[in-house]
Length: 140
Image 1 (cartoon, rainbow, N blue to C red):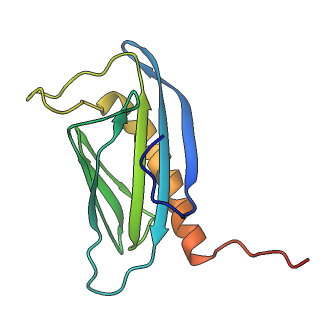
Image 2: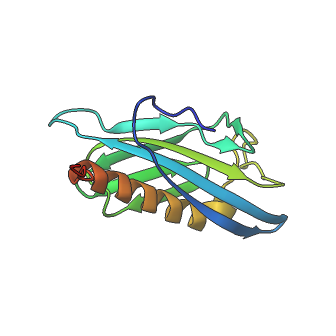
């Protein structure tokens, strides 16, 4: 389980199977979103979990009015509908085999790129939607 921010509501999505050269893997993502004021920093770093262990390499991300951009570990993509906010993202990849990048220090997550983009897109958009329009409480 990732290091989640306490007392917050996380949205969870998982991609069941990701075909890779060495078999199948699973990608899981958790996300939470908070409002920011003008001038607040929206650039953050997180360390993905590879087989439940934190990676030494970081994935960086920042949010602006154009969306949420993630880059690092051979990934670089933008989530278009996730607008400017403070995102807390955790990513877990379960796989029998992960190659390293050319420098040998970071995991090469290109095999999981489409699945990571899909999962982060779903979680970030859902987290932003819940921040903008929180679920209503039922009166009893």
